Image 1 (cartoon, rainbow, N blue to C red):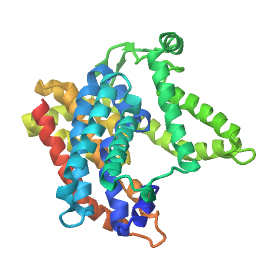
Image 2: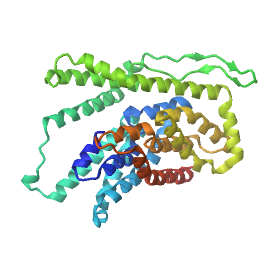
Image 3: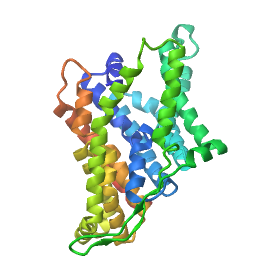
Image 4: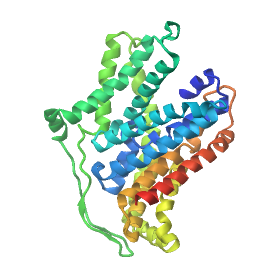
Length: 382
């Protein structure tokens, strides 16, 4: 809804303006929104960021490079693509490399944000070089742009401080909750042994860091008189209106995933898939993630639902769990852009009323190519 009008102003057709951002942002879904989808992957699998971040960021980096090509090809005029290819590769490498370095360094919460900013920096430098130093073409950022960017800079600063400043990190992580889980057994005899849930540090959680950054930006904007009078109530109501439906969906998906795991259905599904597809399953893993994201509307829900199944398949086949889970979240990230909810949001960006079916048909080929690439590299990485 934000990018499409900008592309329309730049001369793209309405259908291109809606579809190209879907293709171009698919690589950023897993580590975007403070890594919500990646957090779900860790929670559902029980594995930590030190295990999952590297393979996931590597696969998504490959998809980043390919998605840039798939966006540039239809968007470029005849002969322009070859001329702009070096810049395209430089931008893609900067974005993919920055995301990978942030992810493996423990800053996965800002992996996509950092990658996107790195890409913008390369584009800015390239644009300055291509257009020369003509004063008439000089860009002077408006106050609105600077203030809008400041919110992201504050978020990055909060996360970096929470990770790098030892005493602060210790204080944020000092309060934790690790609930004990009792042993359970079904009437058919499937037992789950007792254990402990994943550690939760409420004051150091990514959601808490986002809240700290939001409060800091709120205070900053109030000091600069950027807000109208009494904005707090409007902001809180808008947040609740957007967050409640998503929260209900996530809670239900967690419930479904837990029931599947604790009832033994995940093991049964894994056994059936092993007997059916056998060693070819790594090539199918991204497609399973994509189907889950398409059906549920988000990569987060897909990871919650299918990560345990991917783990069971990895154990059955004797392949690396982290690679199959990377394929899961990579496929889910790509497949999520086809979900009717997202396509519907993009379609209403124009009063002309672009049909959702036209957008989906426009996306099928590039999304299919991205999923095919995810399958190939999931097999190669394993």
